[in-house]
Length: 593
Image 1 (tube, rainbow, N blue to C red):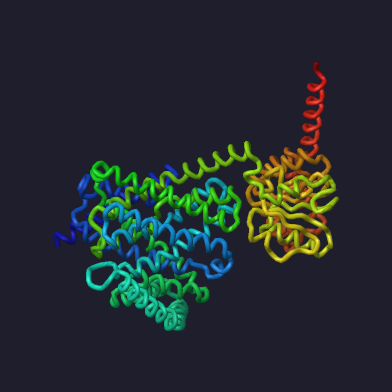
Image 2: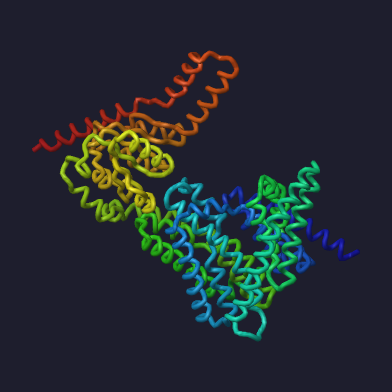
């Protein structure tokens, strides 16, 4: 009874502390898991000592790992994997293999045994999806080319975590050589994984549909949890990680009908509760004195993670054809040690693969690198801006430099053509329509895959950054009739408009914007027209709704015209007047003695 009372008190303390720590982290614009770990350290045995049953709490926290891997399995999109492209897959696989190998070598240099060195390579290979996506979202970089490359690499890392944790038991104990045990573990994982996918592919969707048709939310949730824990127990019985079975169950549900998405929706609150318990338990195991005693080792691990992943990803991205700008930003985004690395380190410690100092070392280094990520990304951006300002050719491919030196008849001899800045979903649709109408165009994009698609009969594709004046000149902007700025990055789009208006006062510029403030900025810099996709969608919904409610079509069209006019600021005319005034002042200065 006393144990139960103590355990209840421990759980109360942990969740109250997790609430305070998570809230504080959000107010500081940090990932909540850092708040959970911080309060775990505070209430743990190495600080205030408010938790008396640390091992029991850790056992409960393992449910968080199982549910976390289940959610990862459900959230993985096979369609997204198929559309990533060979270049991103090559970068991701190269980063995983290269970092694991380098991490293993560094571990050997540190004097660790084979098992611990391999685990260190795994820990080092994984970055924090949570931290990176938040950093990119805050900067508005999530939809840029570097953001898409980074997101693809992170997705491959998340998938790679599953085989990593599956083979951990093979690294424990003595006996057969490590490679032999890894092979046996991989074979077991493949067999069990295949059984779950094949047999569960029919059974699990049927069970979920039956539970859903009962009309009881509680029955559905219990069914999902029972399936997840049963799959986890199956893999645990054969000597593999329980998390592997949970992932397999989630993957089966992700390929099923609507019941899979509902399963994820229902399990997420339970997952988040136990995940908070898990990350708080990691904090409880961290001794602050370790940082003081092993400071050189912690710094060495931090430096290894930042330098190795930054350089490796940047070189791989450049090697497959991305521009230096994209390659360096992608490398700078994934320098941290990720949240899945905590799970690897904790599982390895429980299996006796690593010593007792390895987990606190991982936690200290991961927290430091996560906190550094926004600063590293900002520093890479600032450095690139300075370098590209002094060396414009740094961001311009050699073939584009040659085109830029062509005579004023325009790129490829074109005149009065269309230039498309950005070949994403919007730009590609515009290019296809221009092709259908037999209108000549030149499109610019930083993604090498985008410019190596099937050639257009009436279009030319340039690989480069449209925000560079040399690229716009190479595309023939000085003699073009229309520039369509369809880039998703508002900063790059605004710079493109500035350069285009500077080198051509007659070209008509149409820009894609995301907010009214961006529309005003675009037009103030010289855009003749702006399109706000979200507003256009809202206007179409409004038009259909008003017509359905009996409002006359003429009145509806008037209201839509009024709404569109709210984006008109007369910016293009003001921009042309400003450029003319600048030229007149420059001419006057030149004539002064």
